[in-house]
Image (cartoon, one colour):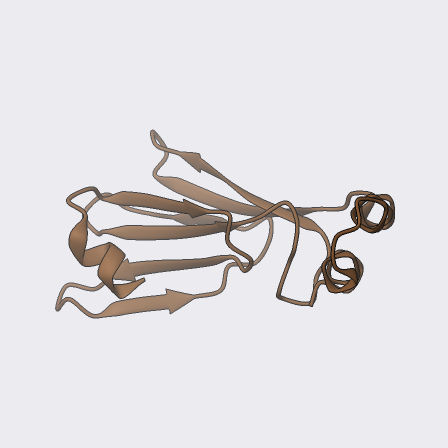
Length: 113
């Protein structure tokens, strides 16, 4: 993420199709700071910093939580809220198996790992 923060001129960059939610910002001295957001907490993302929001994905989680994850950015409020939501990951895993895809992909949907 370090390279992303330094290569963009934008204050807000969002990364999707990733497997764990996170939020990074660049401090006043140029240090990249990372923290793990808690679902449902609104985080102030003030425009005087550069932010990289890693919003997660709707499948193939890697953080031990099988729920789908996403984030909502409210530019006027300068706020970002991360969310987790349940879905029928057992049916999704069955569809992965029926499609002939590797078993570990199906299992990951159930276990979140």
